[in-house]
Amino acid sequence: MREGGPRRGLRPGVTAASLGAMRSVVLLGPLLLSACATFPEVDAAERGIVGGPAPVLLPTDDLVARSGSAQADAETGAALAARAAGLRARAGALRAAGPAAGD
Image 1 (cartoon, rainbow, N blue to C red):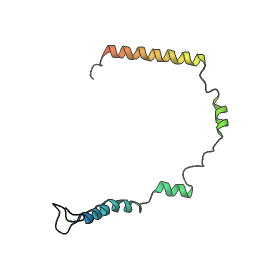
Image 2 (cartoon, rainbow, N blue to C red):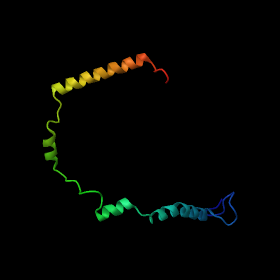
Image 3 (cartoon, helix red, strand yellow):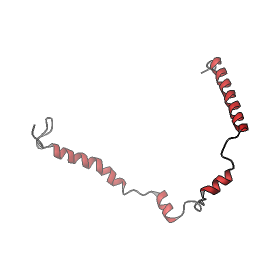
Image 4 (cartoon, rainbow, N blue to C red):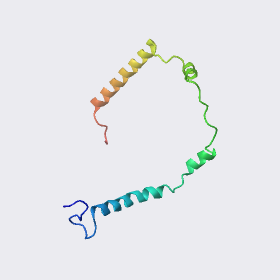
Protein backbone atom coordinates (compact mmCIF):
# COMPACT_ATOMS: atom_id res chain seq x y z
CA MET A 1 0.00 0.00 0.00
CA ARG A 2 1.40 3.37 -0.87
CA GLU A 3 1.74 6.25 1.62
CA GLY A 4 -1.36 8.48 1.77
CA GLY A 5 -3.33 6.26 -0.55
CA PRO A 6 -6.76 4.79 0.12
CA ARG A 7 -6.95 2.25 2.89
CA ARG A 8 -8.59 -1.06 2.55
CA GLY A 9 -12.17 -0.87 3.82
CA LEU A 10 -12.50 2.90 3.38
CA ARG A 11 -14.78 4.57 0.93
CA PRO A 12 -13.21 5.75 -2.30
CA GLY A 13 -11.67 9.18 -1.93
CA VAL A 14 -11.04 8.80 1.83
CA THR A 15 -7.34 8.73 2.56
CA ALA A 16 -5.44 8.11 5.76
CA ALA A 17 -4.60 11.82 5.93
CA SER A 18 -8.24 12.89 5.66
CA LEU A 19 -9.18 10.28 8.25
CA GLY A 20 -6.58 11.74 10.62
CA ALA A 21 -7.96 15.23 10.05
CA MET A 22 -11.48 14.05 10.85
CA ARG A 23 -10.26 12.44 14.08
CA SER A 24 -8.58 15.70 15.07
CA VAL A 25 -11.79 17.66 14.54
CA VAL A 26 -13.82 15.13 16.50
CA LEU A 27 -11.37 15.14 19.42
CA LEU A 28 -10.54 18.84 19.49
CA GLY A 29 -14.09 20.11 18.96
CA PRO A 30 -15.40 19.34 22.46
CA LEU A 31 -12.17 20.60 24.00
CA LEU A 32 -12.47 23.93 22.22
CA LEU A 33 -16.15 24.23 23.17
CA SER A 34 -15.33 23.63 26.84
CA ALA A 35 -13.06 26.68 26.75
CA CYS A 36 -16.19 28.83 26.31
CA ALA A 37 -17.71 27.57 29.59
CA THR A 38 -17.95 29.80 32.64
CA PHE A 39 -16.77 28.72 36.06
CA PRO A 40 -18.55 30.65 38.85
CA GLU A 41 -16.01 29.65 41.51
CA VAL A 42 -13.13 31.06 39.50
CA ASP A 43 -15.04 34.26 38.68
CA ALA A 44 -15.94 34.75 42.35
CA ALA A 45 -12.33 34.23 43.42
CA GLU A 46 -11.13 36.82 40.93
CA ARG A 47 -13.64 39.37 42.28
CA GLY A 48 -12.67 38.58 45.87
CA ILE A 49 -16.04 37.22 47.05
CA VAL A 50 -14.95 33.80 48.18
CA GLY A 51 -16.52 33.79 51.62
CA GLY A 52 -14.11 35.59 53.87
CA PRO A 53 -10.67 37.05 54.18
CA ALA A 54 -7.63 35.14 53.05
CA PRO A 55 -5.91 33.10 55.77
CA VAL A 56 -2.90 34.59 57.48
CA LEU A 57 0.32 32.81 56.60
CA LEU A 58 2.71 32.28 59.51
CA PRO A 59 6.43 31.56 59.44
CA THR A 60 7.30 27.92 60.01
CA ASP A 61 9.25 28.74 63.17
CA ASP A 62 6.09 30.19 64.78
CA LEU A 63 4.08 27.08 63.91
CA VAL A 64 6.69 24.75 65.38
CA ALA A 65 6.86 26.85 68.56
CA ARG A 66 3.06 26.70 68.94
CA SER A 67 2.90 22.94 68.46
CA GLY A 68 5.22 22.16 71.36
CA SER A 69 7.49 19.17 71.24
CA ALA A 70 7.26 17.25 68.02
CA GLN A 71 9.17 14.29 69.49
CA ALA A 72 7.42 11.43 71.26
CA ASP A 73 8.68 10.80 74.76
CA ALA A 74 8.85 7.46 76.58
CA GLU A 75 5.35 7.92 78.06
CA THR A 76 3.79 8.60 74.66
CA GLY A 77 5.63 5.62 73.16
CA ALA A 78 4.42 3.32 75.94
CA ALA A 79 0.84 4.55 75.52
CA LEU A 80 0.97 3.92 71.78
CA ALA A 81 2.46 0.46 72.28
CA ALA A 82 -0.29 -0.42 74.79
CA ARG A 83 -2.98 0.82 72.40
CA ALA A 84 -1.47 -1.18 69.53
CA ALA A 85 -1.38 -4.32 71.69
CA GLY A 86 -5.03 -3.78 72.65
CA LEU A 87 -6.04 -3.36 69.01
CA ARG A 88 -4.14 -6.50 68.01
CA ALA A 89 -5.90 -8.46 70.78
CA ARG A 90 -9.28 -7.13 69.66
CA ALA A 91 -8.53 -8.05 66.03
CA GLY A 92 -7.53 -11.57 67.12
CA ALA A 93 -10.77 -11.95 69.07
CA LEU A 94 -12.81 -10.80 66.07
CA ARG A 95 -10.99 -13.24 63.78
CA ALA A 96 -11.60 -16.09 66.21
CA ALA A 97 -15.30 -15.22 66.52
CA GLY A 98 -15.83 -15.50 62.76
CA PRO A 99 -18.51 -13.66 60.80
CA ALA A 100 -21.38 -12.15 62.76
CA ALA A 101 -24.84 -13.62 62.41
CA GLY A 102 -26.69 -12.13 59.46
CA ASP A 103 -23.56 -11.26 57.44
